[in-house]
Image (cartoon, rainbow, N blue to C red; front, side):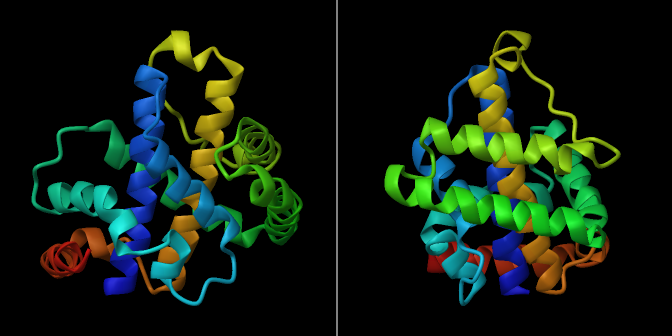
Length: 201
C-alpha cells in the first residue's frame, strides 16, 4: 500500500503542475524537477528512489490526502488523473509504443544529464516524444486552461513532458498492484498510508 501511495502521489503531483501551468503559465521549479527526473529513473530500486525521496513527494501526498479526505477543491484534477490511468492501460498493451517511448527517453537522458531534466531542450524532446506516441491513444488526455498559455509551444511541450511523467507514475502504480478499487473501497487504507508517509517525509 505504501508503495502504491508514493506512485499515486507522483502521478497527482505531476498533474497538479499540468493544471498550474495550463492556468498560469508558471511551474514550481522543484516540483517540476521531481516529476521530470522520475521519467529518467527507469531502473530505480524502489518507488521512493524514483522520485528522489518521500520529502520530494510531499505536495502530491497532500493533494492525495485532500482527495481521499473529501477536501479536494480542484474538480478537474481527479478527471485528469483518471484519464491518465485509462491511457496507461492502452499504453502498456502497445509493445511497439512502449519500446518507442523507452528509446526516446534513453536518447534524451544524455541531454538531461548534461543540462538538467527541466531544461527547455529536454522539455521539447519529451514533449515531442509524447506527441508522437501517447498522444495518439484514445481517449486523449484533455488539458483545460488559459488559451493564452495553451497556445504557446514551450508551454505545450512542458505540459506534455509532465503528462509523460504522470504516465510513468501510472505505470509504476499498476506495477505495485494498484487498481481502481483503491479509489472505490480502499479509501480508508489509502488515507492511513498517506498520513503515515507525510509523517515520514
